[in-house]
Length: 327
Image (cartoon, rainbow, N blue to C red):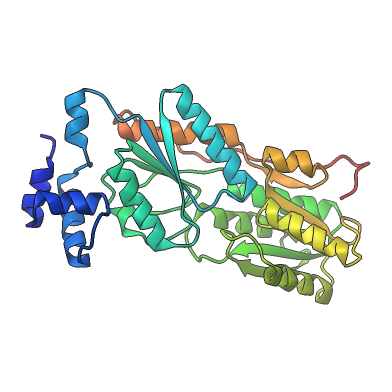
């Protein structure tokens, strides 16, 4: 039997009004009360307004999207593709950006539940959020391990890193710099680094710098990378995304470097807008359309409790500029 608001209130030992206020994040409530209500909702597998929807005989037709940011062209393109595909299926989306703020993401998760979303697609880079482990809504993660019960859709990150390393070797780079994510998680994105290192082996000198790839690189970050390039005589760089690759290229050229003659830079993502505006940037292209389709298919399998969809990594490819072009 579907749990009602009153069931949650009784289990939590509070009033129905208090449960409603917690769900809608309204008014001043103690953290103890909020936690009791959330614990009761999880135990009863209660979805806000589930009873009202069942009486209406239809779903809300809303899906929640949580992305770290939409300044990165890749996330913009992926969110747009997901939105379009869902619209064609009769669904609408509510988009939230969580950045590096765990509290903000937790509030968005509560807000999406209160707004009757049928499920959530998240590309969160915030780790350790308990709401993902105790989710009472269908959730699918993109490229991040958030909890054992949350399925992941990802591209072949290992192969992407391998292709980048192999490309730099074939271009004759000797002293390499790889920019790696510093979240220390078991995220699939860490496999890019493993693939890169397997490709280059012990043949070249490799320097590793760790950054928060969730943030747009600032001048301090760029300066740190440039200093390593100058001091270590780096001639090949594997950037963690295209935004970093472009910003690094622009800075080096402003300092008199010839890219790629002096330094070869390989990006990652290959979003349509970047490939259009920067056709001379070698990059690893992720299949945005296929990723959006797989995310939706896996989420719908969770929502409607149909047979599980395979979550084998999607293939990536290397985009290599034409020989007569220069960075």
